Amino acid sequence: MKLLSHPASPYGRKVKIAAAMKGVKSQIEVITVDTSLPTNPEINKANPLGKIPALIVDGGAQFYDSHVICEYLDSLAPRPVLFPATGPDRWKTLTLGALADGILDAALLLVYEKRFRPEEKWHEPWMVRQRSKIDRALDILEQSPPTWADAPDYGHITTACALGYLDFRHEGRWRTNHPKLIGWLDAFSKAVPAFEETRPPKA
Image (cartoon, rainbow, N blue to C red):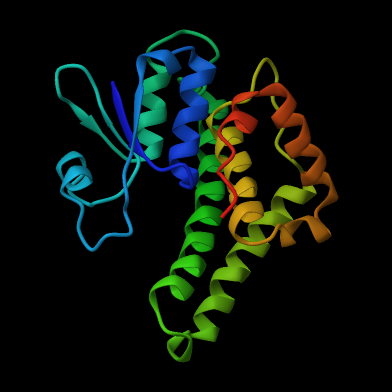
């Protein structure tokens, strides 16, 4: 299998952590691609949306986005279970994953606003709106940090990657008012060594 990603991508990080947890890391060749280019034929061929991560499996099938790839990896080995098959646990996992992905989406849009637009065109009301999304989600998570039984699942992986991205690109400002989440992330890091192993390089 080939994974098209980038060391700084939090979505790619989710997939790498899932692969490590499922014991299939050695079966995946990670190919670093540059998505900052106006067009990148390599990634466009694997994903017509031009987004990473994208997974090319033996036989040529292509999977995207990170949620789909993680669920595919979950199907390759029985333990640990990253996506509960049915019932309330499944919806809890998917909802937590969606909340954390929303944090990531808003955080990435804030990065792109400053990266791709000149400062005089930064739209402050729009940036405030994105920050508000992040703040509301973090406050919900702080009230009741998500727990796990045998092992963290996809929702926990995504939450950890969202917090990690806020550390990486947003100077860890979330830590000021969320002490429970700080402790939660420390516990996740101890439970899942791949979290530290996939930490993005300093910018």
